[in-house]
Amino acid sequence: VYLEEKSINESISAYYGDIFRYSLSLLRNYEDAQDAVQDVFIRFMQSSSTFRGECSIKTWLLVITRNYCLKKLSSKKSPHITADESLLAFYELNIETRITLNDALTKLSIDEYELIYLREYADYSYQEIAEILGINIDSVRMKLFRVRKVLKKYINEK
Amino acid sequence: MKSEVMKHYEYEINLFVDGELSPGGKTELFNHLAYCEMCRNDLEEYYKVKNKARKFCDDKISSLMPHNSIDVFKESVPSKKSSILSANKEITSPKNNFYKYSFYTAAATVAVLSFLLVSIKPQIKQLTKNEVRVDTIFVRQEKSVIKFVYKKTEQPNSDATNINMMKRNKELYGFISNMRTDTLTSRDLIGKNKESKL
View 1 (tube, helix red, strand yellow):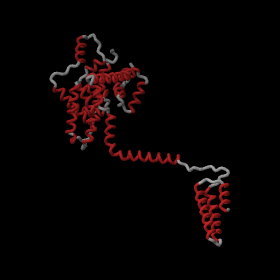
View 2 (cartoon, one colour; view 1 turned 45 degrees about the vertical axis):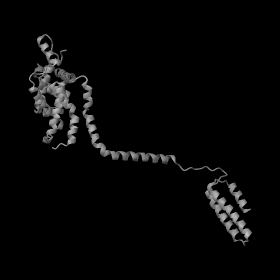
View 3 (cartoon, helix red, strand yellow; view 1 turned 90 degrees about the horizontal axis):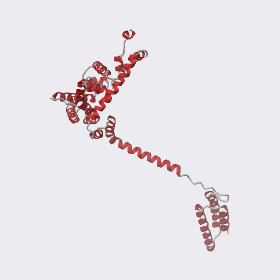
View 4 (cartoon, chains in turn orange, red; view 1 turned 180 degrees about the horizontal axis):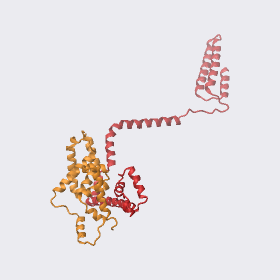
């Protein structure tokens, strides 16, 4: 499928926000997310001739974003420690402290958090999530179920 | 004992809160929820998890963005709908300009014409008792005048009488031409005729 320059420009302006927020949720750094957006759109323009039309442009852009962000995360030698993580370390020392749902959410792995983000925040359907993550739709169902089941344990803790 | 045997629908509830459960599955779930309190609690809890997770993601994104950059980000990044709409506007506006202007011109013309049609009416003058329509009287008088003039011209002439006749004729034609423009009463006409006959 040949993408015209006009549709490329439209896609960039339409999905800029989605790409930025997805990058931000994965990289957890504002500047890194900005870099990611630029890099993703450069890649998108360079490889627009290879777009086969099997999925939507939006999904394709999100796949490029995901690949970029995961690569960026793996290349980082020392993981970026956020305030939440230091807080969790504090909780681990104090066993008596009850873990709330927010704490449980911060404890999620990057894959689990990504799944929650795509479903709850970005509001993508299971089919779209499956396309972005490159997995089966049944796997999406099952993974989301497992994550929520874990989170459900902490729902009544305040 | 019963709850151990009974099948619970936790997995289906998870799909239901995401709107991903099939219509048949929904019916089955609702039938089950009618008598299973445990699953009703699960449904409530899954909704809570979903809402809290959404809020958590929202807070997380907001906290990751520099405080002063949020507005800039919002300005520079239009929402999906508005950006698509503006893109569509950019595409369609050059093509639609001609149609747009022609439509406005046509609408303005129709408005002006309809205004003229309503506002400009033929002025119907109400005649009083003593007034008559000039054109009708004019035709009658014209005939009589022509006859009168013809009779006079038939008479054997002398130079003096011819000059007098020509003067009278002039007066009559002047009178007739005045009749075309003035509103006259029947009295005026009778008076004038009398004078002209004299």
